[in-house]
Amino acid sequence: MTTTVPVQRTVLEGFPGGRPRGSWPVDEYAAAQCDQGIAARVVMDLSSDQFLVVTDTPTR
Image 1 (cartoon, rainbow, N blue to C red):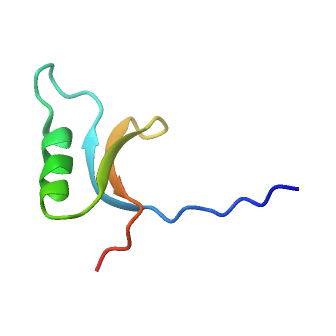
Image 2 (image 1 turned 45 degrees about the vertical axis):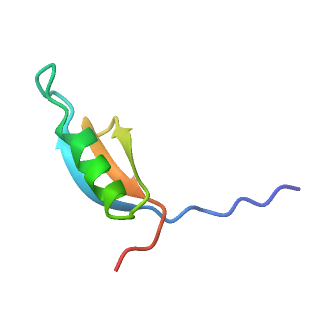
């Protein structure tokens, strides 16, 4: 039997999925968080049509 441990994720910021081509503020925001030492990444929330910047690391 395999036990699954849920991962606690924190959404740092959300961005609309329909941004114009060539405009990637979500990637810039995630990179800025990484520069500050927060392990952030971008995921797509299909139900809300948003790109989310999330972290698995507890935030203050």
